[in-house]
Figure 1 (spheres, rainbow, N blue to C red):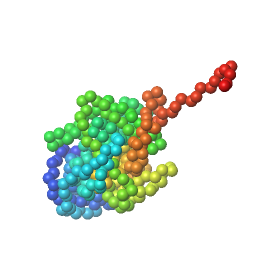
Figure 2: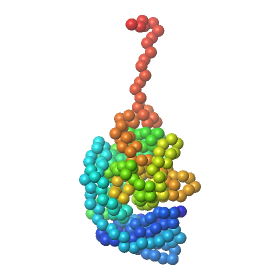
Figure 3: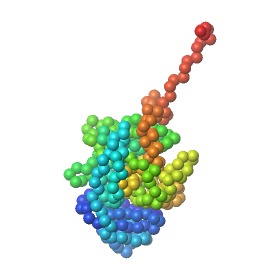
Figure 4: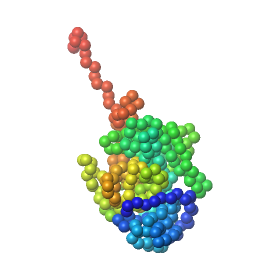
Length: 312
């Protein structure tokens, strides 16, 4: 898939029923309601945005795919993040986007922007280290669901709690006094993924906030510079960095952070097991205000005794 143009037309309330699947050349699939088929474009409603797809990129359209309401799964709070007590039921991208969209945020700094996702109600969120690198002026844009519509809210009091440059992960905390309870997303387990399984991403590629892209898991063990990543055909571009890669159970299975240059369908995500390790051991990666360019905190070295002080 070379490109998909995204037009934000407003909030569309879609009743449960049946969805359509638009298969793209290059193995991508978009699930939603086909609003229009023209000679040059196909318009698809995915819940809160409408994707306008060039006709030349569409391989086939399947109508009337079963689309059932998503039942919230029981979740267990493990420290800063949640995991499902048992695997949630499979659903469609169209239904999951409506359920999860409020939890995906845009992270902005003076030097650029990226994506992130809420992991706890009191404003803790995950993004990539390279999104906030060398910056302490961070703002987070969140879309809150109120009265059946999504309202954009920008939070400017954002603290860096922990970061790991080598794992490309950062933990932030929104501390604005007027911040409400946020909607967190559960973390899954990439070990349960199967190569060829459908996955999807929500993020802000090239600044186009709340963009949904879909693909498959290409491999679970792609080595890049000595670390293993999830490789996916899900389109990923600058601005997606730090955003979640979801499975069809609505769980985060990875953090999108890079793609192969001059290629399409070669995106990569940090496995969620590394995110859990980072959160479980966040004290080791605590942000140090005295040394803001360093992702680690070190104990001061022992002092050398003066030469004229006799040793015991």
